[in-house]
Amino acid sequence: MKWIVKMVKHDVVKLAVPLVVLATLFVMGLSAVTNHERVDFCQLENRFGNEYPEWEDSLWLSGEWQRQATDAVSDRLPFVKGVKSSFFWLRNGLLFAMQKRMYSFTDYYVNFRRDVFFYGDKEDFSLLYCAKPLSDKRQSIMQTMAGKINSEASGNPGVGFYLYYVTKDDDMRFDNGRVYDYFGQLCSLTNLPETHVDRLKVGDFCTFRRFFYRTDHHWQCFGSYQGYKDIFRLLGLDEQGERLNEPVADPDSTLGVPDDSPPVLANGEPRPVLVSRMYHGSKCNVTGTAGKFQCKMYAYQFNYSPMKITVDGKPSKYGNEDFYLHNKNVSEEFEISYGKMYGDDIGELVFSTGRSDRPNILVIGNSYDNPLLKLIAGHYNTLYSIDLRWYEKQKGNPFCMDDYIRRHNITTVLFVGSGTMYYSSDFLNF
Image (cartoon, rainbow, N blue to C red):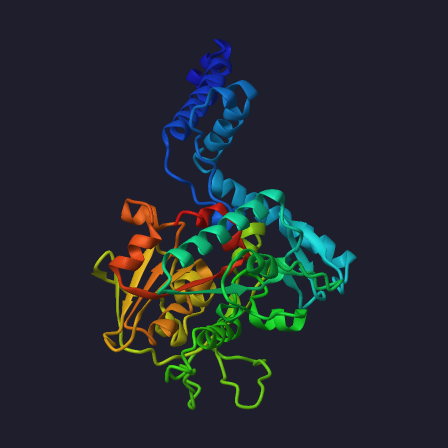
């Protein structure tokens, strides 16, 4: 105790506290400045971390360089993701409790956070991204994307180019029926024949809620299987004598977890397997409410064609469907994610079936193609899957479609993705 009294008498504490604070801030700042790795905020804020800007005199003079550098440093401070996550969880839980008392959520959108809205009713609502017109920047990117597709198609006349568009919540408003026809805009900009383009047809909230998760921007198994059937016809696989891969029935109901309220199915429609009763997807992560909102995750069981899957020439597994279809562990139900179930976004994946009588296909997509790849691959000799966001990072060089088509004897190119793939600059590098 005496030494504490001495420190207080001689103002050591008063001096030490600010020094410790300054030293801590210095260490944290130094750590942030020297950390140049890209920070992934996707699960928390639906974005990547801000990058350090390249030097330009004009940026410095306008103050834009300093702003971008500050944002980059802020994203790299130690513990920043943990602190933000805790803040969002507390803040949004309270916000939801207040809004639930005030609104019925029926027939209009209630803004929650970061362009995420409630829609539905108090007990059976969905988290939606609110549709709005494309900005001038996004329209410009879509025009560039369409121009690149046109250029590749005209430069490879012996290759069939196809486009499949995943319509979702940010393409339409369910309260007033307003549709933002991004698919139509895209088609009007490309030179692809009408028979080479198609989209997931979502005309109302009931269909949307069936095709998509309540808490995630990705599609439920009902939506992805409809997408596979659409693409099967789009590519003319039925006319080529190929048979649709249909879900396998589970007569003993040994798969999945108990389902107290299974979905209503049409006559002959395959019964899905419930793999999680507490699925919480990207929209929960964006709003920091993974423990507040949950929904069911269903899956189909397929007998995939025998195939060899490789990443950079090395044998690889893609997705964990079999594990989750047989899972009975509650903790795994809570921890499951779309990527864990169907496979993560990877720069280049190769699926080889050994069907030498069949051609090769190149699929350019975002995460919406993850549940489709093994289904489509079964109809081809080799399927090459490219995610343009990650290809260069994985392979060490930019993706060149012309060269890739020639080297791998590609006869069909299929673009698969939601609107963000067609108006985001991350997908222009081909």
